[in-house]
Amino acid sequence: MIGLDDVDSFSRFAVQHAAVVSTACPSVIHPYRILTVDDDGNEAYLFDIPKDIRGNRHCYPAIYNIRPALVGIPPGCILDETIDRDAMILYRMPKEKLLDKTILLESLMVNGIL
Image (cartoon, rainbow, N blue to C red; front, side, top):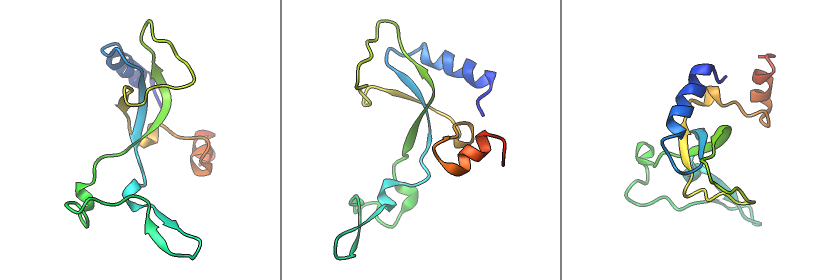
């Protein structure tokens, strides 16, 4: 769970940027490992893995899930229906601090059941 030290650290980070800042954590599943199944039952990777890193998972680019537990919005920023995610700055935190209540196991942890 997020503590006061985390909030202070996030705040110091966010004020240094002129873009929206959101917390994020490493993704559990890399998009290169996701399979799809067509109507005939054939499996295929959702994304093509570049040949130069195929078979070398340690070479995959780092992927983060946006988990907006803390969000820094700079002065003068106008928020509408869409936020330019390309301009968003990610503040990386461990997954254990950014539990997602929409995931059953994590919801039980948030509610103190586990």
